[in-house]
Image (cartoon, rainbow, N blue to C red; front, side, top):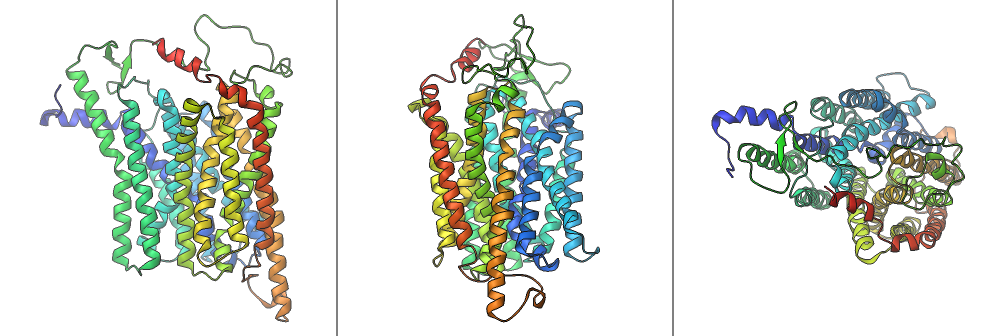
Length: 569
């Protein structure tokens, strides 16, 4: 089979590639690499606090508004039900630019000082845009590659985890060490990416690719290489003073690595092009869909797990009449059956404790560094480390937990328990800091935070089925902003401000004597993070209850029905 293309074929191949699902996948990687602006809150939050004269409780209220916007994806899902993908992406771009641009106008003094509730709305709108990116890019990609959905989720969410570190390097190269300009960057850059690729991302008929698993491992290798470089350059920037040209060089390498999946996508589309020109005999006959010539289609109909088969249609009872029924674990629960299940409530409580504490730690990282006397550039590196290890946590928990289930029948909730115990170590390092310990704490907190998300989403899909998965995982996700509000706003912000007021009293000053209420010293976050350690430990014990409840289920072959569907092709 030929490998190259003739000069006369270059234009038709380019058009096929730009309309094909491999280029759509590459575009999805770029969109998700810009969809993690919420992880940069710790970098620019100090500017908001200083320029708008906020105390820590008010700043943490903004952090909660951000988390609320980032975790309420119901609106993007409902819009996607009745509109095409390009409209979903455009709405997300508009929300992203509008929300963060208003914040930038506020912190730069270009508009009158907004009221607190207005700032909460701005950041909630900006953060909510990432749900539109998820719906437009992630959900569409999973539909286009249904047999690789696990790898797809890990890769795309992994790129989101790297987003903060990627945009930090671009920000340092373009704007220097001006954190106000970072707000402007996260306003226009993700929006611009969505607008550029808005018509390339759409649902296409899936194709059975002979080496799809190998291709996704190549994408994984490219993403790991990007993460390693980001970690190395972040640490190097701490040891060496970079010039403007050096920052530009680092950002150029980062952009090249972000775009490296494009070469893999071109190669795979070229393979499809050659298969169309020189079809070879195989058990699966490949044909060309005439309505969309760039898409290959198997002549067999793929019956997806969790969807009704032809001839199997049944009259279903109202969900209210079946609420007391309890299907077997792994079968398709209705929404009400799942939400009233003890398993869901146990998982919800573990998520409330684990993700709530993790979001609190991530949102306060900038102030933690400031309280311990680190300069602004060092605080930026802490945020980048959280972003990078967030990626490693997502990849690790997804691939490793899958291997443990398949080979050793280890319940996935057990890995959730271990991840939460690991997070406790990071919180202890913040509560009782030592020289350099915040670097280690940033890595641990970032890794454990990233690892929780794929585990929670996977556990929900495994216990309650896939039929109502999009709704159920959004419901489970609501535990994190609820936990963030209680642990961040009501607990951490309140205790931080109390310590800051004590420091002022010792100096004979009052709140009106200073512009910003700031606490300096290791005592500022000691009590909040001691409490967060115990809360997370309780979450680990809660997760252990789910391990006991589901151990027999995970000892069975939980993927049997999926494999049977695949073998019937």
